[in-house]
Image (cartoon, rainbow over all chains, first blue to last red; front, side, top):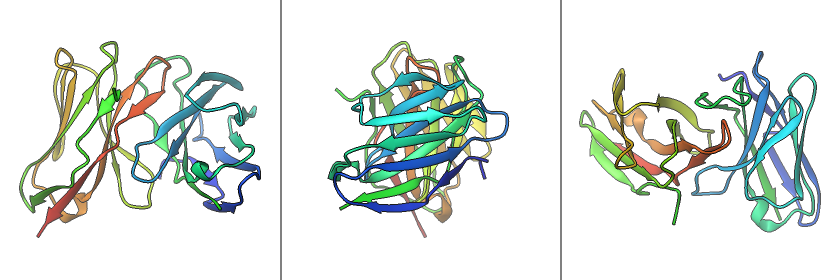
Length: 115
Length: 111
């Protein structure tokens, strides 16, 4: 158990809909990162939040957005869902902030299917 | 060119043998390197991390790093059927805690 919890575990949506995924970070962690893992691929970095601000973003369009709350929990929002958005969405928390070399521990993920 | 490259496998080794998993990366400025194990349908689990050139051992696992050759490897000694999984190599990029992953190597340990 990593102490990182994600909800829901599974979700089915149709193309064009919007979805919100949630993540509760491990106690004491102030940084949350989101990753997308398509079937047969490694996780891809979406973005990171540190102290409620976006701190780095991967190659994902603006319809992927996020929030971090004062208790360091986080949401990932995806608008105008596309079939290719079907993937496992992973959240990881750390106390890294701006500091490198920190180990990332992932939650159990949300499996999103877009039909 | 992929930033982190791994052979997708499957790599098949008999029980009790040494499994050797390899990874190359393109960013010479990378400082932190991680190995994750992922069972089918589960999330990645951190098993090793290494920051300095050389070897780092933890139980049956040894991570090896050669920054000059931009090469990271993971050795698993006395392989067990429970080691059968996909092993993901990850490299920390320009943003702290931003990891770039390879596509993973699937390991099969046979009885």
